[in-house]
Length: 259
Image (cartoon, rainbow, N blue to C red; front, side, top):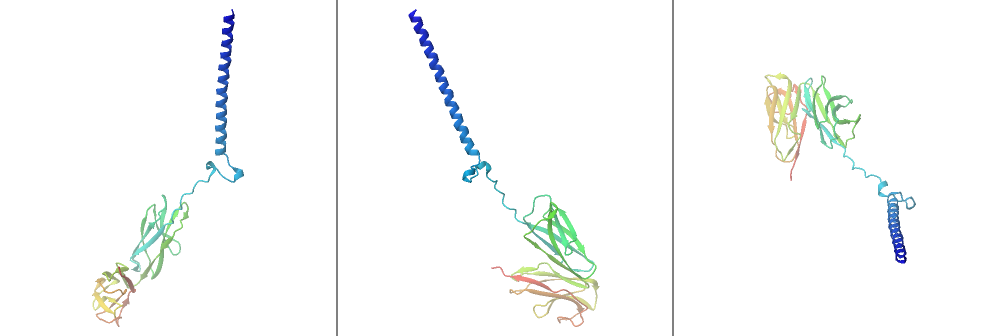
């Protein structure tokens, strides 16, 4: 009887110890969760008193600015007879925007003479029925507005009557060759010629032709710029000819030196 009572007491004590141990474990786990939650709270909530902003509240870094585009327009030819066509070509040289956008060619009055959708090069032909000059520029139109441009290179086209003179390159290196083309709006017949002169070296005649065009390729040594002019006149070596029926625009071709 005594032994049975003793066993019951021991069993009761063991039960109490087991319950106490379980409670201690539960209390430890609850404390750990509480500390972890408090740390998270300090990590995510704004530290107003310190004037700091935790990572979750920091402003998002802005992407680097997109470079403004550089657009240009060229004319072929830049000198033309009245009523004949000139091919204008607009080009985005750098900084093209994302699609879609319009690459436009405008005249000095702001009229759109040509446009292309989402392309880096756009060409359009223009003509004029009266003598005079017209200035053209390229622009990029996107999202309902003209896009700002770092630099927009303009092109001037001159329409003339009777005779124009053009060149295949506006600049050459080290006196390299350049090809000149004089064009008349009438068929030049005897006793007249279309004559091309190098006006920068004492008026030397470079070539003479009959018909509507005259072409000459010229190579000049040294480093001076080229100066050219054309006439419709009788056969002569004098610049200008005494009986010139028409005079072209004067051309200056830059002669650069590569070192």
